[in-house]
Image 1: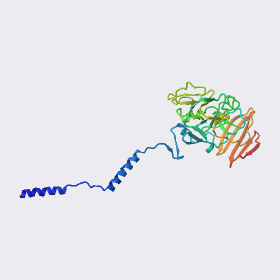
Image 2: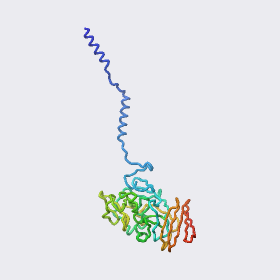
Image 3: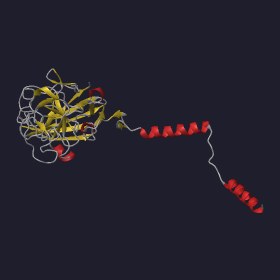
Image 4: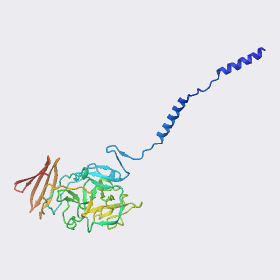
Length: 333
């Protein structure tokens, strides 16, 4: 009997030492389920676009959004890159070497806001491309990565601007609105950005590379527009040392109106257009202040100087002849 009672006592002791998991109430179970579902939903969310924190705009994966130099401002929207600049290069001097001059001077331009350059981000080849040999004599056809526009290699008279002596050592000059622009490819930019990067973009959106392929190999098989396809089937333009020097027209789809690509920024003439100064050669140019410049030219073996400044929207030009006589012209838009 004692042995039987001892067994009963041991069984009761073991039962008291065992434990069971606490059972959650229905409310607690619902809370746990909600937390679990919320955690799962958060982990499943993935970003769908890259956002430029400065502009809060969607940035498509395209080189036009990050190819331009620091003296420009680029805002990428869904299908277009808006590029702002003042049209003056920071990568080289200007005007030196021109021997056929129409007395125009480089002035900053307001290529900003609604007047910014527009580069398509998803260019398309046109069934009816426009040749620069017979058209596009007005306005720009490309934009260099330093924010300087590029015009047709042929001037508005249909002459090769380079062979006519109208261009400086970097392939540019100032137009009738004192707007600086290139007429041949700014190949010096290839040394700055690298051979694998574009030095410009056509206004149709296709990139323009330097004198070599992006991998440094020789360029072969260019079409009449100075372009061809790469191994991946992508079309691009190239610079050349002979005509057409740049993109020889618009191989891509553009809005063509009145002899030029639209939309593109407009310039505003500050003073009357100059006249050709026969026999003059520009020998020096410098920026002497934030908005102050000086240009020197020779004529009949004598040196002339033009100093000009921009202050409070007033443009002041000082013309100094070889004898030191000074003439001042002032313009206000």
